[in-house]
Amino acid sequence: MRSIPLRPGADLEGFRAAVRRLAAEECSPEAVTFTQGGAPGLFGPEPGLFGAEPGLFGAEAARASEEAGPAPPLALPRAVAALVPAIVPHRDEARYALLYQLIWRVRRGERHLPEVASDPLVHRLTRMRRAVARDLHKMHAFLRFRRVPGEGERERFAAWFEPDHHILEAAAPFFVARFPGFDWSILTPEGSAHWDGARLRFGPPERREALPAGDAFEAGWSAYYASTFNPARTNLAAMRAEMPKKYWRNLPEAAAIPDLVRNARRRVAAMIEREPAMPRKRTPTRALDAMAAQGPEDLEALNALIRRSEPLVPGATQAVLGEGPVGAAIAFVGEQPGDQEDRLGRPFVGPAGQLLTRAMEEAGLARGSCYLTNAVKHFKFEERGKRRIHQKPTAGEVAHGRWWLDRELGFVHPRLVVALGATAVLALTGKAIPITRARGPARFDGKPYAGFVTVHPSYLLRLPEEAKAEAYAGFVDDLRRVRMLAQDLAGAA
Ligand code: URA
Image (cartoon, helix red, strand yellow):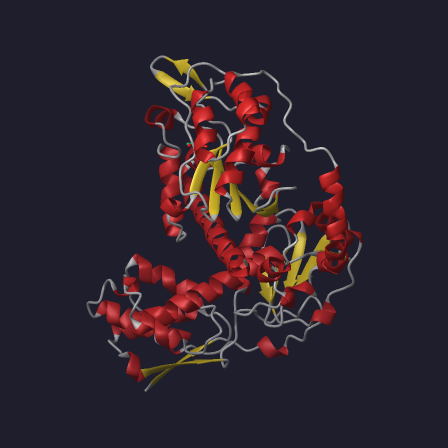
């Protein structure tokens, strides 16, 4: 029996090296065991920044695979190669053995095995993959930095988090991308991650008590949460599903929840008392006049009005209506139809739409089960020779379309609305907020649905070639979070 020692946690690199060697030797899954815990080495000998002793992680363990020299590269189908990093962080001790069984069977001719959902091995691995993805989502969403004493001029932040799986290494790059400009540390019971503005380092485990007390920065979180809390949407079950109690003790804003919930009824009554905020009529169009007179009763009636309306800027062939089932759990809001959409009369069918559809598929979202629409319903462009060049709608044009969009989403009644890009955020919130600040789960004040902000797919198309792959992966990652958030909301409903 071959015994492969892997370091504790998620030893992706060690596992990959072992698989290459085992495959080269045609070693069957029955003839190998993977052991963990005896071979540290990731964190190196540096002491913990917040007090943990370095001894635990001192010695470099000898790896069987390394001793024997590098193994030849191994080509695996993409689906299998992608599954390995998604499963390795799982806490189940059997994860490496299960993955190796999958790899073995795929190499023995079952090339499409990862797609056979009914296979017990695939079923188990799929559940593990989802558990890891969910844990990552929770860490991205619920980790809260607090300001801690720093060295010299530089500000320093730290956070405590207790993940269910070994996800620290997989989660850390997200925080590097989000907070590249300040020094931070993430402390967990299994290890720590430290960013100094240039380099990401991993260190030993820390204790919760090692985290210094919070300050005004943390108090700011509570204030922000209180200001975005919508009393009309108080749904404790949904709140607990998306933000399970386990995370509350590390969330500064959680302290505000009991009071906010207690006062919700009073605040809703006050909101009802206030006059409803109807949009001001800027340029009265035929459609707005008709709507004011008729008040559309359903989506069909609203669409009939939108179809009859005239674009604020002449030129578009037709109004492009939203598409997808009424009652869809997720609605996507883009900016405005593009050239292809204008010609075909359907949203998101041009290059950006195709990219969105592909990313949705990769994230496990069926386009047909989602609702897709735009902040502005007409294509605005400038003619250059034979080409029609997209022009961004002005804030006024977006405000003009808001009344329609609100009604439209009211009829579709999604649980979650995804804003694609800054124009969609403006349409949904009335505020110009940069995507870099708003990206991720969001609350659109006063709206009866949860929100999520991500980039517009056309932004990905405009990026330089070398930046595209990474940005696209981040987009797919966001859409995965959207899927999980919608599942959580459905589970809680
Ligand atoms: N971009 C959008 O925002 N919407 C579309 O329908 C197509 C491209």
